[in-house]
Image 1 (cartoon, rainbow, N blue to C red):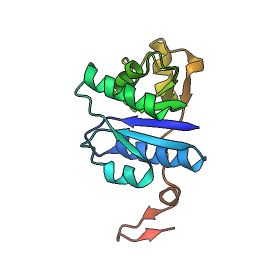
Image 2: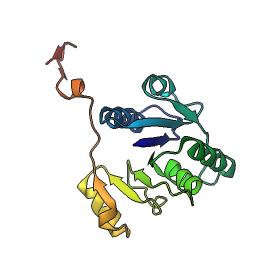
Image 3: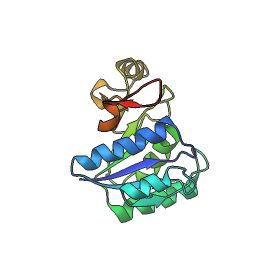
Image 4: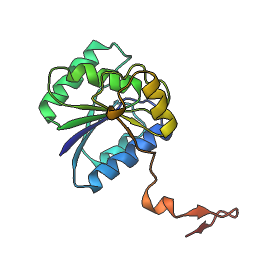
Length: 167
């Protein structure tokens, strides 16, 4: 399966790290991944080390030039599915992919998912978030709960107060 994995964040933080971790998880299952990021994304060097990267820089939810560019990327890459993180990315990718027959999976990292209703599938990080999505009218069968993940090495390491690592 070919996954177009998108995030249009200009920051470096939890969502961005989750994006990189999910990229590695998808690839570990044998899937091909193309990443779609902003040109100024601080995570671009780590992303480029993982998979091919395309660039698009939406200036907002209604940046039609960016939607057109994303649509050309979708058409050229021919992904089997688009996985988009956060509201702006989900909105832009939903509009860019309209009519192309590529399913959109929206990953919500918070409770601002009102701009994600047209996704074919939603990922909530917690059961509480899933319940909130259902209260807002999202169909339960279109929601999966997948918590943020940690890379395997980090999952089993803890830091000592002295700064050393215990395994």
